[in-house]
Length: 297
Image 1 (spheres, rainbow, N blue to C red):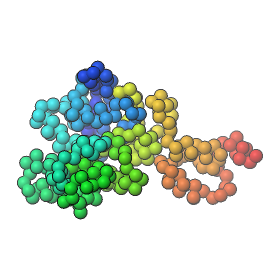
Image 2: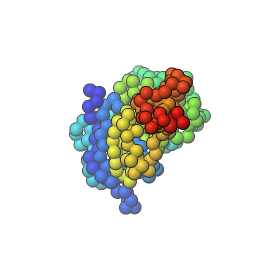
Image 3: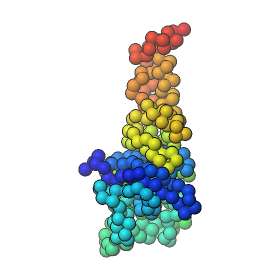
């Protein structure tokens, strides 16, 4: 059921072979059907956390639970986990290894033991979901960087996961490709797939996510609804993050009596839409007396 806890980290730590810590007592929960942003600077533990959620890394301490059951790290347990939780790496070259798009996307379903008809159906559905249906027979090495990322997502979708993990999905994409990827993520979310993505872009996290998990030093220092982010300035600052540009701009306009204090727009286009509907020269009735006095002088 949507909203139920799907996957949870309980005080998870991970120590690498060289003694460095990737995670240090990290705790957070992912709910079914939710859109989650792991927000943090480089080195904060975002990628390490994703690798734990997919079972590619095991905790040195703590526990990870799915449907309130501890992860099973046996071969059969990990196979079952990866049917439900799919990971898309930041660099598509780490994930693509077949000659053609069709071969690469079909790899997972074939390993599930599906017959040819079932495999073809899953591949066709996955490629259609990412807008790559007409590229099925193309050699992978002929694809652009953005197309390779979409094929990686299709390869994960062909496994029909409940939870999709993406590491810095916007990295290396131009604005047009970013918009296309956002459309894909919106479509997947509308289908009920839970999504967790790692990013260091607070503006993107604020406008896209339902829930934000703030990482610093291998720990989740705070988890909150994205709508609450404007009230988290001190928490963000402690993790080396600034408020989103749209929040800062909105506060400046509120201080000048141009806009009311609430609601706070989630993106610059939303802010511009609000401004377009605000009559020029009309005073803001929600502003403070001191602000009105400044506006009049």
